[in-house]
Amino acid sequence: VQLQASGGGSVQAGGSLRLSCVASGRTFSSYTMAWFRQAPGKEREFVAAISASGVSTNYANSVKGRFTISRDNDKNTVLLQMNSLKPEDTAVYYCAGRTGTYSYTNYDLKERYRYWGQGTLVTVSS
Image (cartoon, rainbow, N blue to C red; front, side):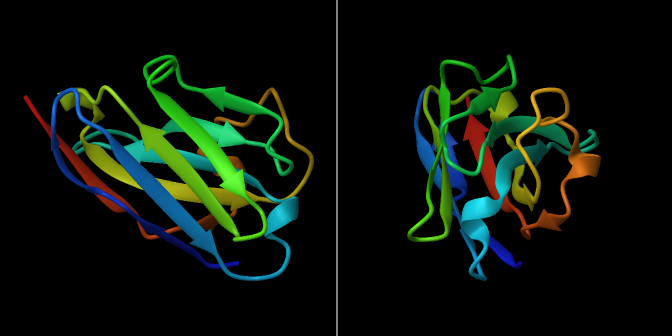
């Protein structure tokens, strides 16, 4: 599976962006998908995850209520709608995918994701 992320850019605080991740292959609908981000000088951190069916979602506390993850299995796409952006949201955002049943205990562990996109930069200015 190859993942291609897009949609990053520069925005002022309070603004919105929508990230998109398109996957190759015919098994996308069986993958748990997630978004992670990495700010300069920091570790890559979990942002949001969604189960294969789209029924289950989880978010980092720092983005809860502001970001929404969704997917369209017919289009092999996972989206991250980001609203009320803050300067601390500035980072390179990566989409990631893995097979297997959605786990409520390790959806936020980057080591459990096998497939990664190339990243898209989001810059939020104050």
